[in-house]
Image (cartoon, rainbow, N blue to C red; front, side, top):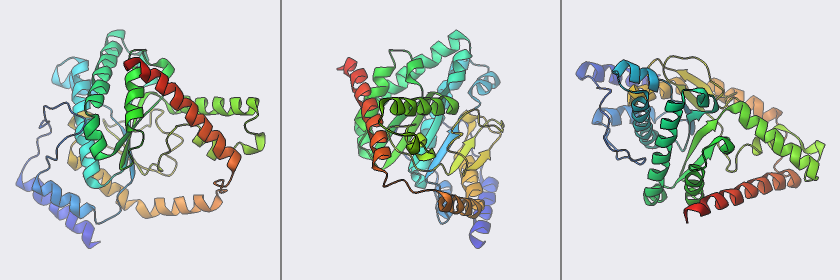
Length: 325
């Protein structure tokens, strides 16, 4: 209790001392940024770090278009500012000790937007994935593994080789993980997982007795993820918009009214504080859930199917990335 009171006093002291300007964004477009926290921000962060810190955070980065309208600029400029805020937030999360982030970059539903905006977003995505490749050496130094999740069949052909190359180059990094949800919805993810199981049943790789929640979840991605601890959505909307529906059953949800490009380290700290307040109830929920789960780690056939499924996807990625060679 003393720790929480100290945190509140420090925050009030800071707000009285100075005003943090939300438009103080570094001009750099790099994915890996330098630490630019003020001393008071570092102090408050260290206070929060005395409590439990989520290992895996998801972000629904909403509000780019409203920010553009508010600033009287083109929608694409709002998305550019949104990317800058993403790189800044990544740095804050790493400084907090968070080891995995999943960010909702582009929903399948976004393809329904005006063609000009979608084309602009695809061009921006291409620039950012190219930038990731340029920064590969820094990603290796930081030990960041990048996994791009979503329905790649919907992605323009010119983007897929870049995405594949990024994943292959960072595949074995293990200090931190960044999951980029691109051309993604949770329902689509679940549907694709079901189809892979259906094919496994048809080919005789698994039997009906093998079908379980663990098997389906293992079919979602080629790299395993930690349980989602905290999910943050900006812009004031209080819905998940088809993002990580399967993974968020035991997750602290935090909705904030700030538009994504105006998200600050203070908003992140508030979300962290919210997580800590709800930590014990979530911990109890996970404990009850774990007691009711059937341990399938020793099921060789299931694990073999999941591993083979991942190997096939890696082979596809290598073929995609070969275009850049």
